[in-house]
Image 1 (cartoon, one colour):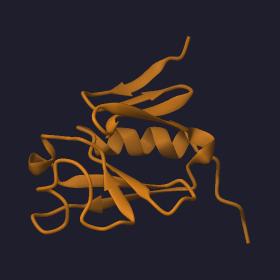
Image 2 (tube, helix red, strand yellow; image 1 turned 90 degrees about the horizontal axis):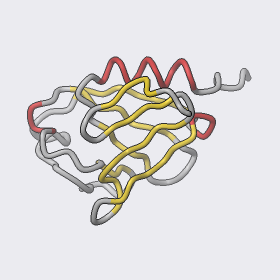
Image 3 (cartoon, rainbow, N blue to C red; image 1 turned 120 degrees about the vertical axis):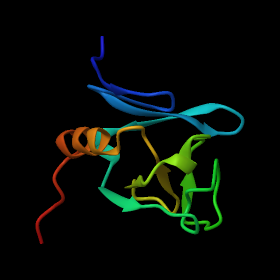
Length: 111
């Protein structure tokens, strides 16, 4: 049984995978293996940079998972999964999710 390391309404980090609820229409969950995360970037969001977006995208490179409470948050996490579209998450505790991801994802290859 997988241990839950972090959980809020929309994001769940277990010892095995990251689950993003409300990622797919209408309410589908995206499951991400930690091994598939190439990079995690924490960004500040503002009125013109995603805070007002509840779900979806204005830029085809990024997809914001469903989060009706995003307007009250300041930080987002962008995941590089090696694909064109990068998930954008706004967990209730971005620092905690970032710490789990950095601990569980493989180190980038050295040049």
